[in-house]
Length: 149
Image 1 (spheres, one colour):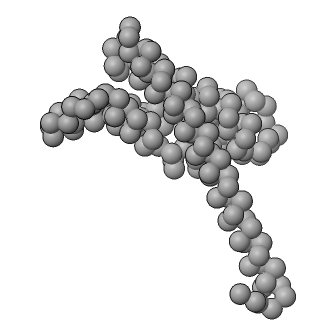
Image 2: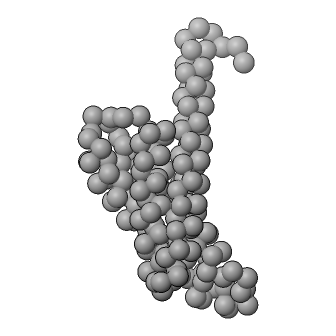
C-alpha cells in the first residue's frame, strides 16, 4: 500500500514494530518450549521419589531457571536492572504462573480426566497442559515487569 510521505513512514514503522514483537514472542515461545521440556522431564525424575504434587512443584523450579536463563539471553534486551533484580521480578511473575500450572495440572489429573475416564498417561498429559497454560500471561508479565528497562 502506497501512502503519502509521513503516513507511509508511520505505516512502515508500525509494521516493523509488529514484526519485531512477533519475533520476540516466537523467541519467548521457543525458550518456553525448552524450559517446559526441562520442567516435564525433571518431573518424571522427581516423581520417582516425590508425590505428584510435590514433583510438579520441584520441576517448576527447574523449568523456571532454564526459562530465566534463555529469556535473559535470547528474548528480552538487557535493561538498566541487575540480573538479580530481573531474577526477583521473574520469580514473582512465575510465582503467579506456578499457581495456574499447579491448579491446572492437579485439576486435570485428579478431577477432570478421571471424571471422563481419561487414563492414558493421565499425570503426564495433565502436567504438559498445565505447563503450557500460562504462556500469554507470562509473556506480558516478563515483558512489562521482569525485563522492563
